[in-house]
Amino acid sequence: MAFLLLAIVGVSGEDIAHDWTMSVDRLRSRDPTFEGALQEVLDRERTSVADSIERILNSFDIPSRLIGGGLAVTDLKAIEHRLLAPGLG
Image (cartoon, rainbow, N blue to C red; front, side, top):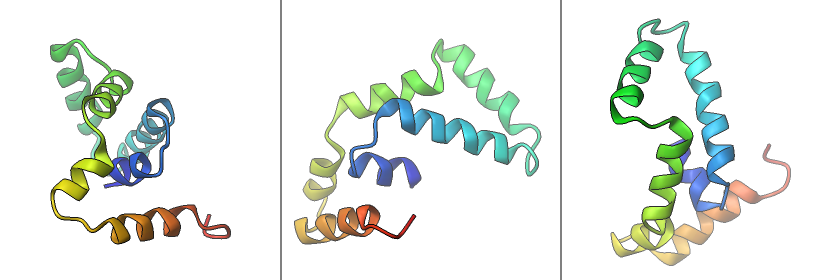
């Protein structure tokens, strides 16, 4: 969900990957096997988190896909406004 929200407001793939990497670090205490399992998938696919995120972001326009799936443009704008409003960080 965070990936989707960050993409909606135009955060770069590099920054999303950095955010995701920080999340993996935080997940380590909850599930010590997660990082190893993730690395196995990345190795098997010969990719990285950053490359995967860039590939997804470049494969389609997320806001357009959401609108095409039924999200109202006004709702998308409300999400953008809420996420970018000053004083919320």
